[in-house]
Length: 204
Image (cartoon, rainbow, N blue to C red; front, side):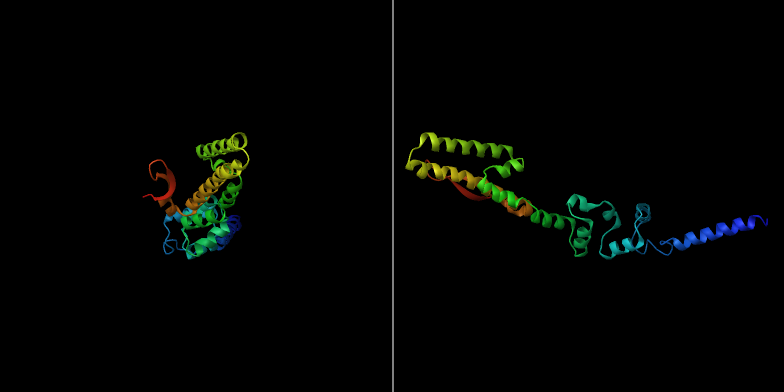
């Protein structure tokens, strides 16, 4: 028995030390508004008590945090936590950062290089249509028109493709950051017997 006393004492000391080092020893997960499963997931993830308390303080459920939503939103964890602490939901964070880091630069470039935005965003049909019209108008300008006709008729036709490409790209980026903008679109409507014109139309 005497030989067992040191062993028993050692086991008791180790158990007590483990209890002392258990940061969750005095934590009541029910009072924190967590289910037993949620609390178990938190412990298994290795999350610290301070981290959990911070999440609860800013209104973030640990189950949402453990999914690492910042990866899908393409922001850092720190930025995601900052925005959530300011009361923003994930959908709002998504719209904010898509608006900041969207394709507006590419859209403006599309005014200079027709169809570049459309190819970049996989709008293949639109891009092909633009390129076909662009090459056709250049062909007409170079091989069909002559002298002042190139300036009077050819230049406006070519410029129209630049404008088409740029405006289409800007509208597309506007839709990316503001879905409500999709209620408006451009369309071709008849005006008179033998003419057509571009007009803004409401779409619901």
